[in-house]
Image (cartoon, rainbow, N blue to C red; front, side):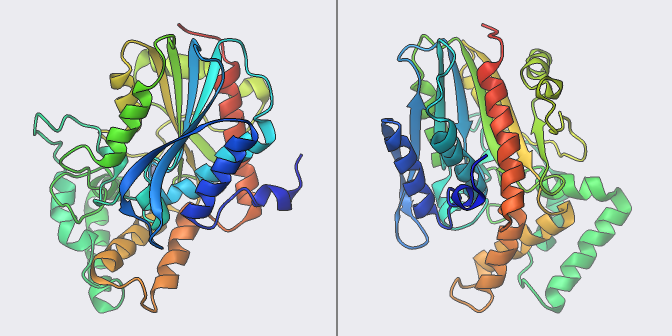
Length: 367
Ligand SMILES: [Zn+2]
């Protein structure tokens, strides 16, 4: 196994550094980078791009796609795992007819600003719905909670009052209903939490454009979307849509018994239901191929801590100032929730991601 200093150096401290690591790792393998320019600017004024690199034959039959940064700030750990794979395993031969495509920082603005959302406050994983139809999923729980979800003060008595309101809601309806109401996605409060947007956001369009570049020879796709912030600390969980054929394929592809790795398969223990995620988007967009999309969640903090962090961060983002005294505290809370400063966490997570990619690469073909 690689030395830990060496390993940790693949995990970046800024978006610009992550992008640099990715570029260097790809170049070392003689891999060309394709960049998609986001119109906004990063936290330090830097240009923002989603970058891809592809390894494999020109006309593969199967393609494994590994995507980082759907939720911006979660791109830190996702990028670290992508770069580690390229650096440590990128030279290994792939099975015949198989290619692997890395999508780096699909939401580069959220990544650079250490936010979960895109430049337009959209939760990308709630944005892939039919906007043309103009009919949006209702979330009555969020409607009730909206004035308290993002408080006008991120600390002090006003903030405490909003906490009391949420606690009362949980007491009346149950903790999981509170989570579902806050995190399930909503389409009517553009400054609120887990806002799904009212048009396809830039990252949505970019992901679908990238998927459209797959050559017609590709019959099968396994899509792996890398997430953090949900689940037990240092543990990885796989989630997939409740579509029977996909469940059956996932159970064959990611059978943990095969390699004896400690990764929990699936399912929705404590998870909330979300419309418009990347998994359903890819299934829909590539409907002429056999698509098996999964989301891997890497655990950090508890759900109440996660939700409180996001509420405080959103409040501060709207009403605060990024040069204020409170800025380091926000940064710290976001790091704890999405990118723990802990080499052991990174190593455990990398092992799980490595297993998942390996399983997708080595799995029997379904097309
Ligand atoms: Zn996520």
